[in-house]
Structures are given as structure tokens and as C-alpha cells.
Length: 173
Image (cartoon, rainbow, N blue to C red; front, side, top):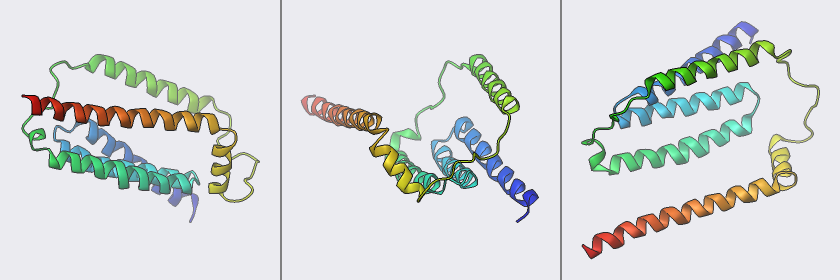
């Protein structure tokens, strides 16, 4: 494929990602937001493929689409009261949100235009990407990896405690 075709495909995936993410944020229907989140996750995975990060792209699809999005959809569909509740908050923080968005866009454009070269570096990986990620995770980044697992364990225990606490309160009343 030539460079023009690759650029067009990249911009199509970038547009799908940004537009579906905007639909997630601005939609008032939770089901529509969840389904548009599917396109956002797939768009991000496609952008990872363009960055030659195939393992991260597959992980994106398996973890986010296969795990988190399916869990979110089941949670929304099994909750009957979600459709009858007003989801829009009374307080709208439009002005701070717009200012923060503009500041973020200016920062990204500044980074884009002041960076000298966007070409890949000279260093090449030896072996597969998965092997390199595994070696880095189990050597240089072992402490952050373990700390992250402890934080996830505490979050899981907290969620289990809160779920059990609600059931105990309902039985007493």
C-alpha cells in the first residue's frame, strides 16, 4: 500500500474513535453510550496496530471489549431502574470543561509541532514484543506491577464488602 492509502485509513480510524468517544460522552441513553464505546475501543485498537503495537491492540480488544464492555453492558441491561432514572446532572460544568479541553488541545498541538522527528528510533527489539513486555514486567517494573496487583485486590475486597453490606442492611429492615 502506498503512503496516501495508509494515511487515509489512519484518519478514518482516528475519526471513528473520536466521534464515537464524543457520542459516549454526549449521549443521554446509557445503552447507546455503551455500544458506541465498542467502536471507541476498536478504534483505539486499530490505532495501536498503526503504531506497530500488535500485542497491545490484541490486549485492548480482549480486555476492554471482551471484558469491561461486556460487563458494562450486562450491568446496564440487568438493571431495570437505569432506564427510568434521570441521568443528567443538575450542575453543568460546561465552562471549566471547555477551558480544560482547549488547554489540552493546545498542549498536544504544542507537543506535536515542537517535537523534532516522529520517525521510529534506531533501536530494534530482539525477540518478540510479548517476550520483551514479559521480561520488563518481571524485572525492571516488578515493584509497580506488584503494587498495582495489591491496589486491584483492595478494590475487589472493597467492592465485595460494599455488596455484602447492602444485602445485610436490606435483611435487617
